[in-house]
Image 1 (cartoon, rainbow, N blue to C red):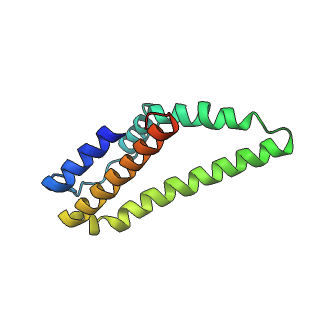
Image 2 (image 1 turned 120 degrees about the horizontal axis):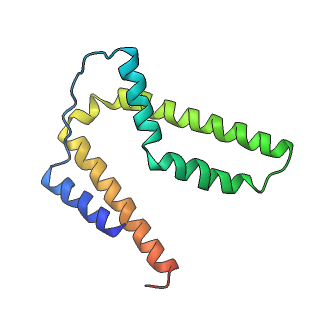
Length: 126
C-alpha cells in the first residue's frame, strides 16, 4: 500500500500522470464482443469478487434472503459499472488537464498511505 502511495506521489510531483485520450473509430459487433469477452473473462477480479467475496458472503443467507442478496448484489454491480462507464465519459474533458491528474494522484497516494498506516496499526506494527 505504502509503495503504491509513493508511486502515485512521485507521479503527482513529476506530472507524469497525463494519459492521452485517443478517439478511435467504431468497431464492428464481433470486435466489440471479443474485446468485451477478453476484459470480462481474463480479469482475475471477476473471479475473486464473484466467487470468493460475494460467494462466501452469500453463504450466510437462506431461502428468500439468498434471493434478495442475489438481486441486490446484481443490481449494485450493474449500477456500479454503468456509473463507472458513464462517469468516465463525463470526466473525459476534465481529465485531459495535467492538474486533474496531479489532484487524482495526490488523493490516491493519501488514501494508500492512510490504508497502509491503518493496516500497520491493526497488525501491531506501529
